[in-house]
Length: 69
Image (cartoon, rainbow, N blue to C red; front, side, top):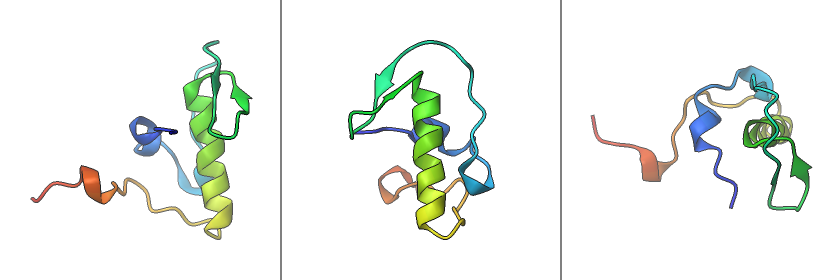
């Protein structure tokens, strides 16, 4: 399972995510290899933005991570 929750708060509208160029290869659920986890998540967010018509709700946490305030 791809866990990109640590990067969700860092992405910009349109699925852009600023990543380092460190070499720590990782594969996504489809088996595609990425240079590092951040770049894998950036690709995932970009695809989510395209599927959603270009709108992503920034900083929205899944129900499992929400707390009552």
